[in-house]
Image (tube, rainbow, N blue to C red; front, side, top):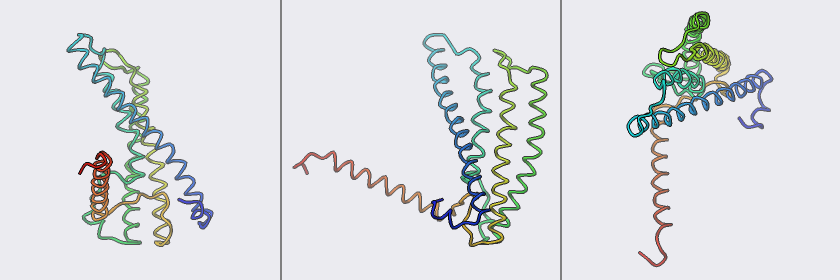
Length: 221
């Protein structure tokens, strides 16, 4: 949101926008960590294949490393995806709503997910405490598992904060459907998605034409 737009908001809306931006920084950082772990696993997997086939020196505990790392890239990015509205959505019915009714349905869905996440946070925390108490470890190289299990309730807690911000944002839009959307994902319709894909395709074709034109030698047709 631009600064000149932020100055036109009410104090409560400005605080909501500030909290949304602050939390989004955390979500972007966690998503970056998840992406770096995926990149690292790609290098480790490549070495595992060539090291086993060519050098007969496989990565010790490769399966254990992958299993522990899956927690990082599977959960740390979910709040970031929720912020951008990137999760799979069933819009056969919800896509028919507009304005206040749309925001009301979105709020109901958000509240349902908040209830689900409350349950999941509780039980994943219990699962972490059990692993921490008994000193659970992986089978092969005995990697301590409680740090990776702690990441799950942590990631769910970050998602919970995002959902609470969205619930406040949707409530605000229900009260005033013409207000500036804050802390809610921008969901594109099927037509908007198709148009963006068309625009991206046309931009790619134009870039190809420009590259071909730049590669032509002067005087050659």
